[in-house]
Amino acid sequence: MATCPVCRGERTRPHWADLPDRLFRATSARFTLHRCDDCRTLFVWPVPSMAELATFYPESYWIGPSDAERDTEARAQGGLLETYRRFVLRDHVRFVARVLADQRRAGMQVAMVDIGCGDGSFLEALGEPSAMGMDLSKPALRAVERRGFKAVHGTLDACPLPPASFSLVTAFHFLEHVRPIEPVLDGMRKLLVPGGEIVVQVPNAASLQAKLLGRKWGGYDVPRHLVNYTAATLRATLERCGFTVVAENHHCLRDNPTTLANSLVPSLYPPSRLSRRNGPDGIGGAFANLAYLAVTLASMPLCIVESLLGRGASVMLRAKPR
Ligand SMILES: [Zn+2]
Image (cartoon, rainbow, N blue to C red):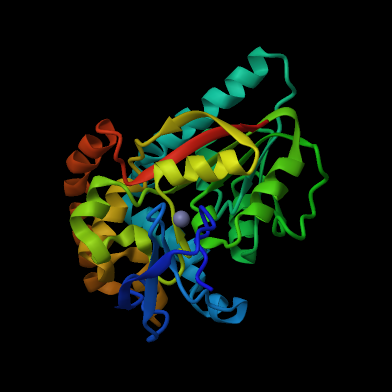
């Protein structure tokens, strides 16, 4: 039965069929997004098996270019790209730094873990010495360690970390990949000390760009995003799972413009191009990167407007267990 992952309602039906993997072309299969009649959540149905899901994630999905390529890239761009990455991460940094500052002010001992930390660029931008990462990708973990942060291999359901040991658990662009969500939120809660909080971020299916672009919206990222939350349904899900939401943010210069760019020019998305090529990128690659950057920059004004309207392409929530 295609039960709604958000409200558990059973009145769901196919909404968009025959959807390809537009972004990575990791599979030639086609997928269907079902929609719940009650809460309107869109979700992939049938849910792919774990084995199928594993084939939908090329290595570059998590980590981007190899170390050698990253060094070459950095030299070629004279550090411009790294400066750009830091600049666009400032919304994440500001939101999370406020949680840590509040905790310090309240006399808490701060310790944080970022679940699904990827290459650790966020941890580095945040610069919180007590922070660490957890991920399943070994190249990602090596990248985090090179940035000077501790990183462990694991998942929340087989968690190598001791319970009740963190004041903050973060998970950016993670919850939309998992189903069911309840054990994941439970795993996050178990890691918290009393008074601890979580920060989670997902694409916002109620954003202006999602409404304008319909089935071509990049935030659906079929078939990897199993459940497409909105700000309202993510809130409702956290509340149903025993959390109280205390802050919400829609501004995200890193993710919102790239989601729009991925909708318009999915074949130019750099990690996607990386997953499809077998050799040096060359001059064509440099041109493609430049074109992608131009579309991303051109997307920024619309993304700022939709965030101001409370309909940004991603939503970050800060919540604490009840
Ligand atoms: Zn529903």
